[in-house]
Image 1: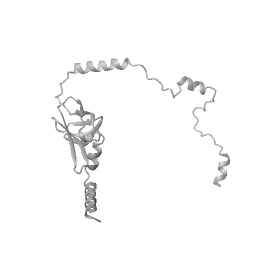
Image 2: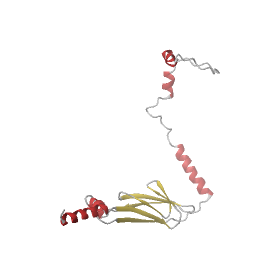
Image 3: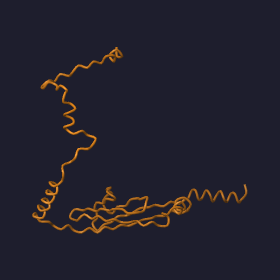
Image 4: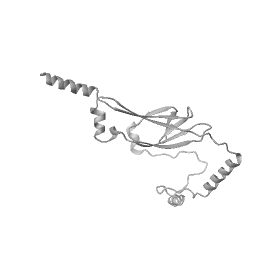
Length: 179
């Protein structure tokens, strides 16, 4: 093998062994240490917390802590050059270095405003009125109504009341298999 082939083989081995990758992570902090964080409805843990992500785009962050108003914030992760088609192949496979993409999200929670008993009762009354104005739940189409069930079983005899006897079952030909 010539020196040129050895050099190409060594270069190919170096690229394959040291092929780069893109590590995508976000770090969430808040002004309240230990605030509970949810990302897109999934609990993540107390702040400060980090997690990996695969795709850029919008994420919904929700922070809650005792004594503070809950905060929901939508953050858009803008794509970087390595997130676009063809370039992502280059960054993930051919680029010989590791790329770390760390996005930072800081959530500012506001202290909860104390509410009086009258405000709480008024809010409960509003919810009660809203609940009473809702229509009754509908029966799904795949389940028959009570009237349809009554019509279906109208001619069948009812079992005797107070009876605990189990009706006899004729197994017929199945009994012969177990002798």
